[in-house]
Amino acid sequence: MTRHFSDAVEAEQNGSIETALAIFSEAFGKDISPKIADFAKAARISKCDSTFSILAQNAILACIFQHRIINIKRSSGYKADLSRLSKKSRAAAVSMRALESEMRLVGNPVLRQVFMCVSDSDVQRIRTLSDDISRLETFARQLEQIAHALRERGGPAEKTAFRVLVLGLARAFEHGSGRRATVTRNPIDDTYSGDFLELVRAVAPLAANLAAVGGGPPLDCPGSTSALGAYVASVTSTRSREKPSGRTE
Image 1: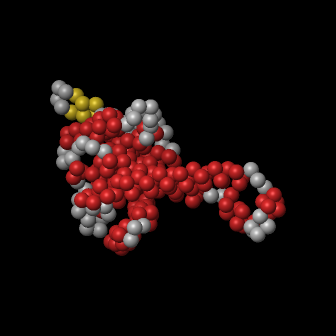
Image 2: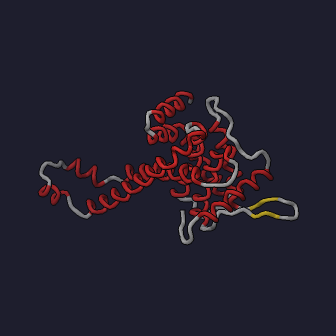
Image 3: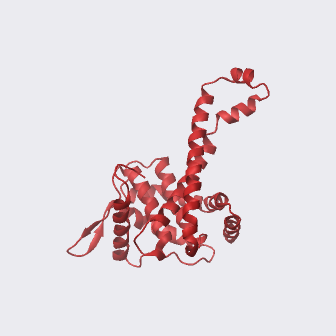
């Protein structure tokens, strides 16, 4: 596992964020995937589909990436880079989806007449781009989650990686439940509750364990049940105020 971190750090330092994220996905994906159903059950998620799984896994991977790779002191320099790369990746995925659709409408014989130098195998590869497009879309989401967290204001700055986790899980929760990611506070006993908070509670221990793999520093998380509720409530409240009207993330 230490080798994975070394490779990821080297890739990031060489400017290949995509490679660094891919290394984290390979290293931790097998640890995260089997637990997705349990996370969904804890939060009463009604639609535990592939999109929910991808969003939840991306939230954890982005948190680890933020914690282990990105130097917080340099975070301001990453905001524009990550946002730009995310937008370009998403645009590329949209273009590739459109190309894939068009290619499926045209039979191989027709293409061979137009492009005599293109072999059937090449045409077939172009017509089946789904796996590559899905990876590109996943990459774009991971970058967006990290960049969005770095842009957000409010909340303890030292918990930036945990904030990435909460924001990413908010997207997963809203997709899977069809409800806003919110936390309810009981002013009488100052306790916090809600299905989204249960999702964060279920995921946080795994994220913390994976973030510390290989002798890394511990993930900076709220230290008590009450502190966790207050922190997640603060993040979701800030997120709601800053999200433009009529827009879903």
